[in-house]
Length: 481
Picture 1 (spheres, one colour):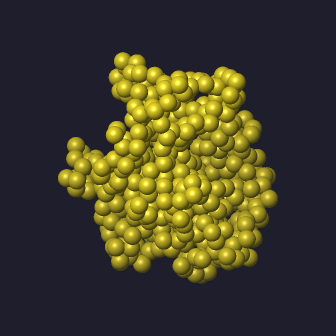
Picture 2 (picture 1 turned 30 degrees about the vertical axis):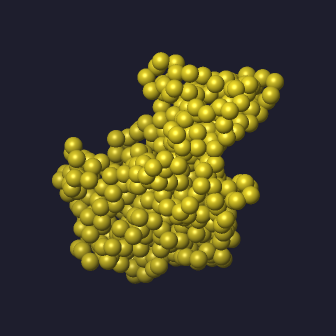
Picture 3 (picture 1 turned 60 degrees about the horizontal axis):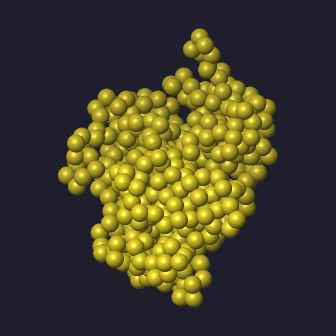
């Protein structure tokens, strides 16, 4: 690591992005996930971190932008990932939709001929080959008393929507859940005005964000998620939920539930841990000069239940600021994907959760979007040629998103993209073009089998071009937000 940082420094690069893996630092005893948990640190990992800051980063007059929480999934691929169930709310109020409330349990059917629960709605997609039937308990663990069997024998999915219930407290946290089994694709939370017009909807991930985002389950499962608490569509008076059943498959959808909710204990444990950690390494400490800024969850805007991770990012921002550190907080955004922060109408999703935006852009042409309407400073936090799959094609259809990397493309593609990003980023007043994962990227730093390191062709281009490569000018390269 230290030798690789030497090469990065030789390019005139002062600021490097790095993952902290806060979950690795935490000791999670039997009280983790409860109100009784008190933050504890792994002494070995903590000592390694401090040595890294003091000897590798600070010792070279460099700095790191620290991403503290790395992507999660419902089936963790790494034991140190942010725990996915942190995002699930706890029901804390009387049911607005549920058993005995607006027919959430599917027991009311005033028209026996249609054998369909009152006030629910269905879009079969294909009336010839897709069908439903109302069933009683199948006797298996977790089976509800009543449920709908959705059968698709076509290429069309089936959409089943719950009754619409009053939305009386905009901005409050609502908890929602559905019990199901089979080929479930995903859920939606729907927001309606008083005329029944759909204003907006939240896409709800039900599967594994890293490998298969669908929520297939061979057993009965109750899945819980949260409503948005910000950027509420104006005029919202009712909400409902929708379950999407996959094509050419059978899915069983049971009761739905909506009530007011609260954040769970893991959410609160994480936020307290963030406060405790930043306090030890804030700008007021001996380690402070080695840390340029903090990020919370990596890439909150892509592939997640964004409205929830956005709320966590807001709480993360407030937690860091409560330590009174002078280190700013950033938030990631991929401006060529969903909810680009470069579009002013999307900025309310981000601007109370960060002091600056970190744009992640992978394009062969090295182009960045129009940043003239951003309401905060920005950096280019990740960059490279198109993130294509090793065998060709693009994620998620041809490979999981985690399997793409700047190094998957030929070095010439990446060198060309990197050179354009640097020059365009400088002209667009980016605070920095971040060296992200450069210590392990062979287009930047090549790790030889004998333990030596050399610059890759993109790294050599940066060294030749970088206007801040002289030691005296490196000291002025620190981003100022």
